Image (cartoon, rainbow, N blue to C red; front, side, top):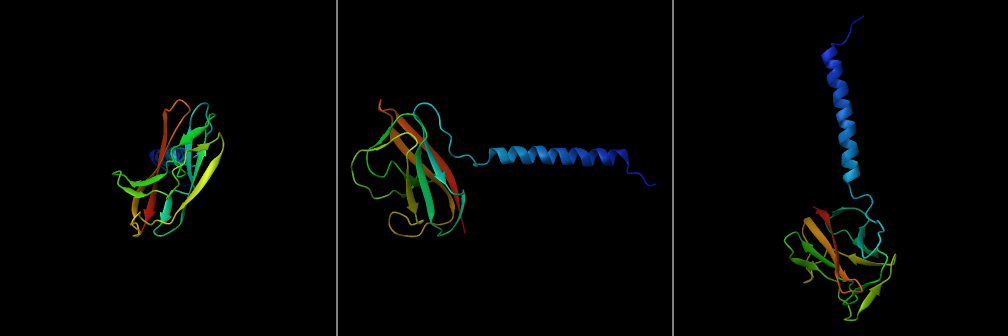
Length: 150
Protein backbone atom coordinates (compact mmCIF):
# COMPACT_ATOMS: atom_id res chain seq x y z
CA UNK A 1 0.00 0.00 0.00
CA UNK A 2 1.31 3.42 -0.97
CA UNK A 3 1.28 5.90 1.96
CA UNK A 4 1.24 9.69 1.73
CA UNK A 5 4.25 11.44 3.22
CA UNK A 6 3.53 12.59 6.77
CA UNK A 7 4.54 16.22 5.97
CA UNK A 8 2.03 16.38 3.07
CA UNK A 9 -0.76 15.02 5.25
CA UNK A 10 -0.03 17.61 7.97
CA UNK A 11 0.11 20.44 5.40
CA UNK A 12 -3.25 19.42 3.89
CA UNK A 13 -4.91 19.20 7.32
CA UNK A 14 -3.49 22.57 8.44
CA UNK A 15 -4.65 24.13 5.15
CA UNK A 16 -8.16 22.76 5.56
CA UNK A 17 -8.44 23.98 9.15
CA UNK A 18 -7.08 27.41 8.23
CA UNK A 19 -9.61 27.69 5.41
CA UNK A 20 -12.49 26.81 7.73
CA UNK A 21 -11.36 29.28 10.40
CA UNK A 22 -10.77 32.09 7.89
CA UNK A 23 -14.09 31.39 6.17
CA UNK A 24 -15.97 31.48 9.47
CA UNK A 25 -14.28 34.72 10.47
CA UNK A 26 -15.01 36.35 7.10
CA UNK A 27 -18.65 35.26 7.24
CA UNK A 28 -19.04 36.67 10.76
CA UNK A 29 -17.67 40.04 9.60
CA UNK A 30 -20.19 40.49 6.76
CA UNK A 31 -23.17 42.77 7.19
CA UNK A 32 -25.71 39.94 7.67
CA UNK A 33 -27.23 41.35 10.85
CA UNK A 34 -27.75 45.01 10.04
CA UNK A 35 -30.52 45.40 12.62
CA UNK A 36 -29.70 45.07 16.30
CA UNK A 37 -31.93 46.67 18.94
CA UNK A 38 -30.16 48.30 21.88
CA UNK A 39 -31.03 50.23 25.03
CA UNK A 40 -30.99 54.02 24.61
CA UNK A 41 -30.75 56.03 21.38
CA UNK A 42 -29.86 54.08 18.23
CA UNK A 43 -30.63 54.17 14.54
CA UNK A 44 -30.06 51.53 11.86
CA UNK A 45 -29.91 51.59 8.07
CA UNK A 46 -31.03 48.51 6.16
CA UNK A 47 -30.54 47.63 2.51
CA UNK A 48 -31.42 44.30 0.92
CA UNK A 49 -27.74 43.78 -0.01
CA UNK A 50 -24.46 45.69 -0.19
CA UNK A 51 -23.60 45.22 -3.88
CA UNK A 52 -25.88 46.79 -6.50
CA UNK A 53 -25.75 46.91 -10.29
CA UNK A 54 -25.41 50.31 -11.92
CA UNK A 55 -28.92 51.77 -12.36
CA UNK A 56 -30.58 49.28 -9.97
CA UNK A 57 -33.19 50.64 -7.58
CA UNK A 58 -31.86 50.75 -4.00
CA UNK A 59 -34.35 50.43 -1.16
CA UNK A 60 -33.15 52.03 2.07
CA UNK A 61 -34.96 51.43 5.35
CA UNK A 62 -34.27 53.59 8.39
CA UNK A 63 -35.22 51.99 11.71
CA UNK A 64 -35.17 53.38 15.24
CA UNK A 65 -33.23 50.50 16.80
CA UNK A 66 -33.17 52.09 20.25
CA UNK A 67 -35.62 52.45 23.10
CA UNK A 68 -36.32 56.20 22.88
CA UNK A 69 -37.95 58.31 20.15
CA UNK A 70 -35.68 60.08 17.66
CA UNK A 71 -36.41 63.48 16.14
CA UNK A 72 -35.45 64.71 12.67
CA UNK A 73 -35.51 68.28 11.33
CA UNK A 74 -37.48 67.32 8.21
CA UNK A 75 -39.37 64.48 6.54
CA UNK A 76 -36.18 63.07 4.95
CA UNK A 77 -35.25 61.55 8.33
CA UNK A 78 -31.71 62.88 7.90
CA UNK A 79 -31.03 60.57 4.93
CA UNK A 80 -28.11 61.42 2.61
CA UNK A 81 -26.16 59.40 0.06
CA UNK A 82 -22.59 60.60 -0.37
CA UNK A 83 -19.34 59.45 -1.86
CA UNK A 84 -16.59 58.38 0.49
CA UNK A 85 -15.26 61.93 0.10
CA UNK A 86 -18.57 63.25 1.56
CA UNK A 87 -19.70 64.77 -1.76
CA UNK A 88 -23.52 64.75 -1.71
CA UNK A 89 -25.18 62.61 -4.39
CA UNK A 90 -28.72 62.23 -3.10
CA UNK A 91 -31.00 63.64 -0.44
CA UNK A 92 -34.76 63.09 -0.63
CA UNK A 93 -36.90 66.13 -1.28
CA UNK A 94 -38.81 66.54 1.97
CA UNK A 95 -41.15 68.89 3.77
CA UNK A 96 -39.47 71.02 6.44
CA UNK A 97 -41.48 69.58 9.31
CA UNK A 98 -40.13 68.00 12.47
CA UNK A 99 -40.63 64.23 12.30
CA UNK A 100 -40.34 61.58 14.99
CA UNK A 101 -39.38 57.95 14.67
CA UNK A 102 -40.62 55.89 17.60
CA UNK A 103 -38.68 52.85 18.91
CA UNK A 104 -38.82 49.88 16.48
CA UNK A 105 -40.54 52.10 13.90
CA UNK A 106 -39.11 52.38 10.40
CA UNK A 107 -39.44 54.37 7.20
CA UNK A 108 -38.43 53.29 3.69
CA UNK A 109 -36.89 55.37 0.89
CA UNK A 110 -36.00 54.40 -2.66
CA UNK A 111 -32.94 55.73 -4.49
CA UNK A 112 -32.88 55.24 -8.25
CA UNK A 113 -29.14 56.06 -8.37
CA UNK A 114 -29.84 59.50 -9.82
CA UNK A 115 -27.78 62.39 -8.51
CA UNK A 116 -29.44 65.51 -7.16
CA UNK A 117 -29.01 67.23 -10.56
CA UNK A 118 -30.83 64.33 -12.29
CA UNK A 119 -27.73 62.78 -13.87
CA UNK A 120 -26.87 59.11 -13.48
CA UNK A 121 -24.52 58.00 -10.72
CA UNK A 122 -21.42 56.07 -11.68
CA UNK A 123 -20.03 52.88 -10.25
CA UNK A 124 -18.19 53.07 -6.95
CA UNK A 125 -18.58 53.01 -3.19
CA UNK A 126 -21.32 55.15 -1.68
CA UNK A 127 -22.06 56.00 1.93
CA UNK A 128 -25.65 56.09 3.19
CA UNK A 129 -25.87 58.40 6.21
CA UNK A 130 -28.77 59.04 8.59
CA UNK A 131 -28.64 61.71 11.26
CA UNK A 132 -31.24 62.54 13.91
CA UNK A 133 -31.45 63.64 17.54
CA UNK A 134 -32.49 62.09 20.84
CA UNK A 135 -34.84 63.96 23.24
CA UNK A 136 -31.81 65.68 24.90
CA UNK A 137 -30.80 67.01 21.44
CA UNK A 138 -27.74 64.71 21.20
CA UNK A 139 -26.88 63.71 17.64
CA UNK A 140 -27.62 60.09 16.70
CA UNK A 141 -25.85 59.13 13.49
CA UNK A 142 -25.31 55.97 11.47
CA UNK A 143 -23.68 55.25 8.13
CA UNK A 144 -23.15 52.18 5.97
CA UNK A 145 -21.28 51.68 2.71
CA UNK A 146 -22.71 50.12 -0.44
CA UNK A 147 -21.05 49.22 -3.73
CA UNK A 148 -22.45 50.17 -7.12
CA UNK A 149 -20.88 47.89 -9.69
CA UNK A 150 -20.55 48.63 -13.39
